Image (cartoon, rainbow, N blue to C red):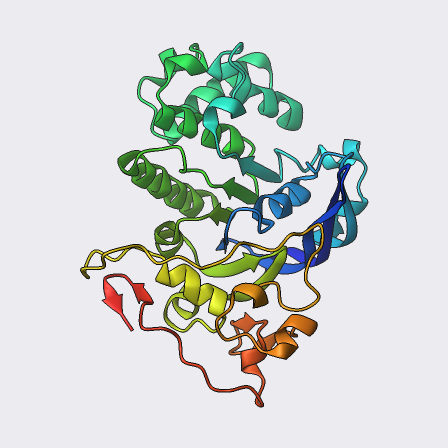
Length: 340
């Protein structure tokens, strides 16, 4: 498949009064044209920081990209000036943020906010941009768009505001859309509508999507490939089927085991014991070693290299070493109404 985005050894740090936090520590990712890549992991694992680095939105100070490359169609975005980056941001690459209310300007009508990017990047006149704004509202399923385009964000429900945010993100037909937990603040019915909308728009516009989420059910419904992130690193990548049915990393096992299962009489939700590592003083070895029930001495001393499980699945875990003991995934992994 054609590569649209390639991230090589990305490193992002934040300087605080107490210490330097290594939020992203050598991330490698690829996104192909017209595919959906999901990035999953606990809060603080580096998912949103990675996405903001792609957009050139790391606040400096205190944040800084200290190493690596972000290649978008061969152009290293980390080397671009802010002025040149603005030609990509909102035009070639767009982002849907987590909270639609804070993403929209309460003092501007919806139509003006959609038209802003169209006028800047595509040079449309005021009337042309307004006409296109009405078309976009209709595209994302907002009824009576000719009237709604004149209204303000507070006149829309949460689900409708999220549709507006999607319309703004899609206004310039971006090649890459980054969705940072786009349905977290929505109820389950509206969430399903937003996800269906994103899938329909991707099919119509051939847009690649990076989906950042905690919800593995959303991943199963939306993604082609999955990257599991922990402690500022990617610990496992693979297709949806590989990650859900043939996972290899103990952290991935823990995430899947924590999913509630409606088909069993499970008295309580399973959780991964312990807490994520302190990235102001990150561990020398595998970031999951302190919480892993299968950790060995080598896990705490050295970070494992990536092992190729298949052409599409890679994992960074010492259990893949031929000298390691054979460990089977737990029986608590259940997907799609079935258990292992």
